[in-house]
Image (cartoon, rainbow, N blue to C red):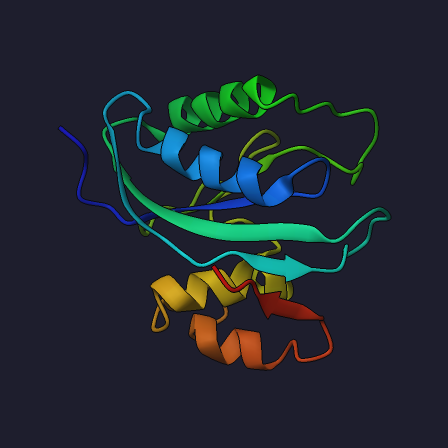
Length: 162
């Protein structure tokens, strides 16, 4: 029932027990309609980028789904709300953030949804877990996830021992 395209979702949070929320959200992704959880990265701790607040816990999950990108985004936003996500202002601390990073080789440019995520190549907290799952994934700029991550050594991120 799920599709053949590799889909990657970024997960993060920095309020409450963020590690527990990210783990629970990973499990919830596999329960979405017509969706299968293929793999999940380790959890990573990172300092906020372009934001204030406590450190984040981040991960990336790989999915297969029969849902089209817009429908998948709606399901991700529903999950965020279920975890108490509020959006009082841009880059506000959050209980859970789910970003649709990559949907196979699709390119979508819009106000509501842009795929691939336009800033994924600039964020170590996305690239480290993505490189764990798909190190050879080629980004829009022609670099692999590993190559792009190596260019962001100034961004502090550490794998959380589980």
